[in-house]
Length: 564
Image (cartoon, rainbow, N blue to C red; front, side):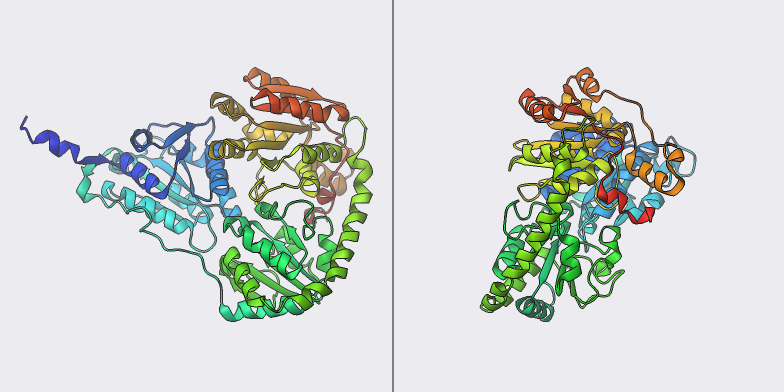
C-alpha cells in the first residue's frame, strides 16, 4: 500500500460522524436514543465528539426527553431513533414538542437509497408523517450534506415560535464516507441569526401608555417568558408598574410565592374585571376558553413570538410580535418616568384581588387539610407544595391529579415547572425527569404522576436507576383514568361511568423496589410528609404510592368545555 494511502483515509469522514460534529456545533451535550441498526454510526460519532448517548426503553421516552432537555437548558434537544417503528414510536414526543413550542431535533433512520421503494426493512414515508407536526422535515440526500442539513434543521427550530424538526438519514448516506474537505460543516454560531426581536416601537409606546393609565391592569405570563429567558424583564415590569401577574405553563415561578404581585387563584375574577389585560406568550386556546374568558370591555394586548398566534380566536386591541423578554423590557423603559401616578392608584385593585385569592383559598382549605382516607388529592398536592424547595424542579404528569396540583403547587424559582403543555400528553413524567436530572444534576426533581400516566412510560424508571438519577416521585393512585371517568358520568350517568377507564390496584412502590429504586406506600395523610422526606434522603429514584380518593374531582376537570 502506498505511503500516502493512510493520509488519504484519515481525511475521510462518515455521515454519522458528520451528524455528531453538527450536534457539537449546536452545543448538544446528550442525545436520547433507542438503538437500531440504521443509526449506530451516529453513536460512534458521538463518542468521538464527547456527546453522551443515553439509551432508553421506548422511543417516545427519547423524544420527550429531548423536549424536556430543551425546556430546561434553553438549548435544542436531540433524539435519535431507528427507522419504521422507531420513528413512529417517537411521533407522540415530537407532536408534544410541536404544541409546546419546544426546539428539538429528531433524527430517524431510513433504508438505503439503493433500496428505495424495494421494501427494505422498516421502510416508511417518515417525512410525510412528520411534516404536519414539525417546523421542518426532510431527507438527507447525500453524505456531504449531512452536517449542513442538521444545521438547517436546527435553524428552522427557531423560525417564529420554537418547535421540533425532523431529519431522516438513509443507511447508505449515514455509513458512507466522503473527503472531509467536500463536506459542508457549518461553523458553530455562524449559521443562524438572532431571533430576538423587541417588537414594533410604536406598539411598544402604545402599550406603555395603556399600562401607565390603566386603573385595573392584569398580565398573564406564559411559557414564552421562560422560553425567551425573559424572567427579569417580566419581574421588573410588574413591580415598576404595580401590575398583578398570573402565570401559566413554563411561566410559573417567574415570581416567587409570597411576592405582592404573584396571584394564582383570582385569575377569572381579574380577567372579568380588569380594564387592560396583557397576554404574554400564551395562545387563545382551550386553556384560555379561546379568549372568551376575558372581559369584553377590557383592552386586550397580546405578545407572542409567532405572528400567526396573535389575534387568533379572539379580537385584540394591540398585538406585538417579538421576544417576550425584550418586549417587556422595552415597555418598562418606555414607561420610565411616568409610572408613579398609575402605580400608586392600583393599590386598591391589588387589595381587591388579594381578597378574592383569600376567598378562594378559604373555600378549599378544608380539603387541603383533610385527614380523610382515602386521601383527598388536595391534601396530597398541598403536602407536595410544602415539600418543595427553591431548588426543586416540579414535573406534573397526569390528568385529574395534576389538575389539582395546578391550583396549589407553586414553584419557587423560574424554570422549575414542567408539564406536557397544550397537547395534554400523558407519559411525559419519567422522560422529563431523565432530561432534568441529566441537564441539572444539582437540582432536586419532584414528579407527580397519575397512575394512568405513569403506566405509559414507567418502565424507564429503570433507566433512571441505571444512570443513578435520583428523584422524588409520587403516584396519586386512584386506579382510574378519573378525568375521563368524570365526563362519562356526566354524559351517560353513573351507571356507565366505569367503561374503559378503570385500572388495577397497582402497587407502584413495589414496582420501584423491583427495579432498584426506593418505594413506599401511603394511605394515611399524616404519613405523606415523612414518606417524601425518606424518598429525598434515599438518594435513589423513588415512587411514593399514595392512595387517593377516586370520587374527588378537580374543579378544572369539572369545568372542561368538552363535558359541557
